[in-house]
Amino acid sequence: MKTFMFAALAGALFAAGLVVGGMTIPAKVTGFLDVGGAWDPQLAFVMAGAVAVYAAFLRIIRRRAAPLLDARFHWPSERTIDARLVCGASVFGVGWGLSGYCPGHALASLTAGAPSALVFVVAMIGGMAITRVLDPARR
Amino acid sequence: MVRTVMMGATVQGLTGGALIGLGAAMLLLVHGRIAGISGILGRAVDTDGGRTVRLGFLAGLIVTGAILAALQSSAFGAGVRGAPALAIAGVLVGIGTTLGNGCTSGHGVCGISRRSPRSIVAVLTFMLTAALTVALVGAHA
Image (cartoon, rainbow over all chains, first blue to last red; front, side):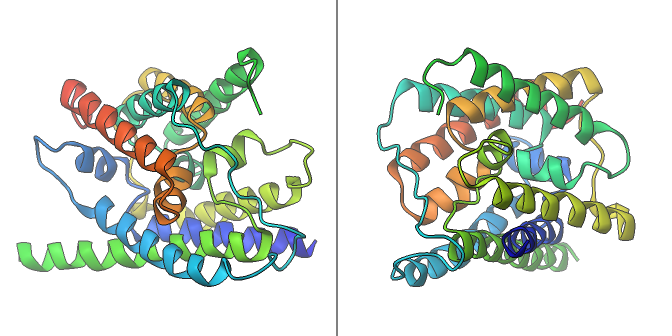
């Protein structure tokens, strides 16, 4: 229960940050990507703020032998830059540019107004499930 | 006037970003896990010991979004395209983040902060294809 509550608080902070930063407005995201048009720089400030805070905490957290509620840190184990990474990121970018939704933004917007985010999230979960079933190298 | 609007966007962006960074840092400090939303969602119910953390994080994200949407619906913009295009986009994001092991949060926020070469390549790649997509189809329908 403690684990669930602390994780939920982290998720709540994340959602609040998306909303405060204006990142729950898809047009702001596609506006940032529209470098040749009416460019909207706000996403860059959100990214800068997030990286600055996370990187600062990272320096402190890294000194610890273990996190507070787990026996060890679960750092990503992948190191290689391969076709799989580049293909995956490319395909993600096309979907992100088309919709202005990234996974966090869409989940935080699930109940907001029109069913746009819901349609996106259901399709996204489908895409994840298909890939995991068909991908022999899945982890 | 334009200057004031720009200042507002800067302060809002940095503040929102700081909160995102704080949430992600908390997940690392308390649970030792990277706040990559696509991975958290894709592996939500995997039985590897992280299920409670993932479900808790998703609950906090979704419920907080729902509460804020009820309080201030203007903070949530409408979809930029119709349902068929959004469904296609959703499938692409699902496939892409599963193959590429991450999205704007895991590779973007956490990966860049860790100076992970993999994440830096991923971010540059998806920024490029996303900008190309918008250049081709426009910022909205």
